[in-house]
Image 1: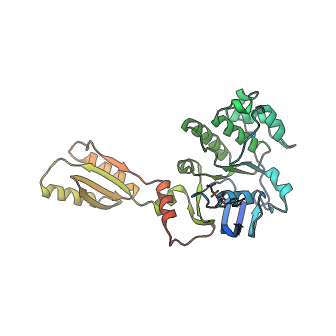
Image 2: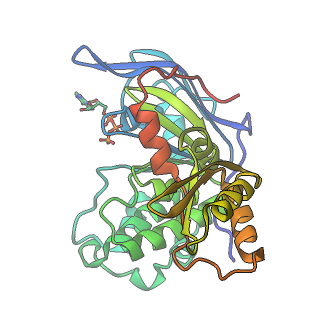
Image 3: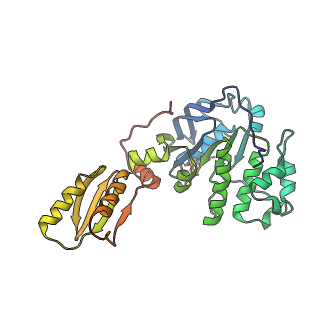
Length: 326
Ligand code: ATP
C-alpha cells in the first residue's frame, strides 16, 4: 500500500486532546458541563450519547469553532481559540453540516482545500477508492462516495487529528461499510480520530475507546467490550430438551448451573433459559455437543451489545459521572 498519510508526531507525541472542566451554556442552559476528556495519539475515540448530549458542541470547541465558557482545552498542545491559525491546519474535519457545491468536481474540490503542505491527492483518492471519480461533480456522487471524499479532504493537509461528526448518517448499509473500511485504513496507519456517532455498531467496529455522554458530561468510558461488560448485563442461551422425567431435567439443570460463567438457569414454557457471562456460551455449547443427544434444533443465543450498554447507561439516574481516563 502506498503511504501518503505519514503524519508527523507532535511536541507531546502521546496526548492529542486534553480537556478539563469544560463548560458551555446556550441561553443560560448548560449543554457541556464540567467535561473531562483525553484523546491519545493513534486512538480512535467515539463520542456517543443521546441527541443533545453536547457531543457536537464539544468537538466544535476543540476546533476553535465555538468558545468555551470555562475550563481548559488543549489540542496538540495548543489553545483552539488563541492558537487557531496554527491549529486549524493540523486538524482534518468532516462536520455534520459538510457539503460542497453540486457542480464542483472532485479535482476542483481538492485544489480548493489543499494547503501548501498537502499530501499527494491522487494517492489519497486511490486509497479511498475514488481515483475514477476525479472529474465527477459532487452532485453525481453516491452518499458513500461523498463521505469518502470528505475523508480525503479532511486528510489532504496531513492532519494530526481527524474529527468526524456523524460520518455515516443517512447512508445505506453498503455505503456505510465502504466508509468504515476507509476509517479502518486511517486507524491502521495510526491516525488519531475523534468520531461523533449515533451508530453503535460503527463504534464497536471502529473505536478503540468509547466515551458515553449525557447532559454534557461523561457517564462512562472504555473499550466497547468493557462498556458492554459493565452495563449490558448477561448473555442468554435458550433451548428445549426432549421431554424427560423431572429427575433427569433437574440433573441437567444442575449440571448446566455448574458450567463456567453460568449465573442462573431457569425453565420457562418447557425451555431451558441460561443467563451468564459471554464465556458461558462456549461452555454450554461444548456441554451440548458433548452429550449423547442431538444438539437442540431451537438453540438460540442473545448477546448484549453496545446499544444495550448505552441504553442502560442513559436510563440510570444515580450514576456518578466520571472524569477522563488516566
Ligand atoms: P446530536 O446528537 O443531536 O447532534 P449533540 O450531542 O451533538 O446532539 P449538541 O449539538 O452539542 O449535542 O447540542 C447540545 C445542546 O445545545 C442541544 O440541546 C442543542 O439544541 C443546543 N445547541 C447547540 N447549538 C446551539 C446554539 N448555537 N444555540 C443554542 N442552543 C444550541
